[in-house]
Image (cartoon, rainbow, N blue to C red; front, side):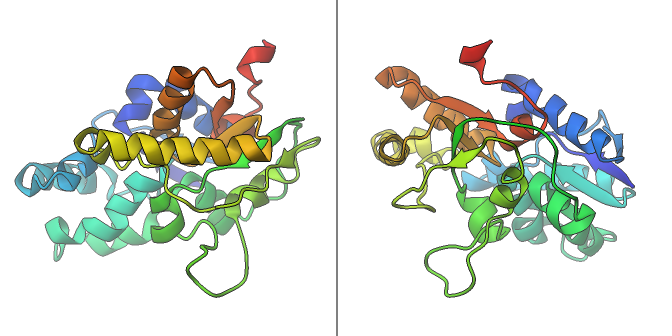
Amino acid sequence: MRIGLFIPCYVDQFYPDVAVATVEVLERLGVEIDYPTQQTCCGQPMANTGCRHETRPLAFKFLKTFKDYPYVVCPSGSCVAMVRHHYREYLDGQPGFEELVGKTYEFCEFLVDVLKIDPVEGSFPHKVGIHQSCHALRHLRLASSSERVGASFSKMRQLLEPLEGITFSELERTDECCGFGGTFSINEEAVSCSMGLDRIADHQRAGTEVMTAPDMSCLMHMTGLLQRQGIRMEIMHIAQILAGREVSNEK
């Protein structure tokens, strides 16, 4: 199976190990990976700020870059949600657009829904708190959400549960927003920080040792809050856990 790997700009610049971990997990599962170096930002920050004119060329660039791959995989729910749910405004009617929407997957859903993998081998003897980022939860349906009636499920937990020694925090509010919201955290700093601290407090109450999510943007926001509050809690993208990374304070 061959894929085009899309790495979000903030992962590329600030958290390159998340990209490396994503590659390691996919290669271990036999996936042939191509990383087109001409890729750029998907345009989500500009779109969220209302700069539609500036977003359009980035959407066209994404389509041109990835249109010939059978699958596009990205370790970010928010970037995948941008392609699936917001590119129509810029690319509707363009050749290859509908195919692009149908073949672009977030990392976890690609493992669960496309590869249908057997349990990932490994151990992670820590209490893990899963943060369900909003785009991954409500746009991509990586897990069941509290406002909808239906069976309970979590694709992240499904991937993590087979790891030896892992336990999970039971949060009071399992799908609450962390308050990041991209440029929202700049325009509404006080509200954003208050929401993030509420999420952290819930994880503290539940005894979370390692907080994980499918989006480093959410985790980046909460990392800053944890550091400023002097709270000791490990932050790891799910790809890093599945790739066998150690908790940093144990190194």
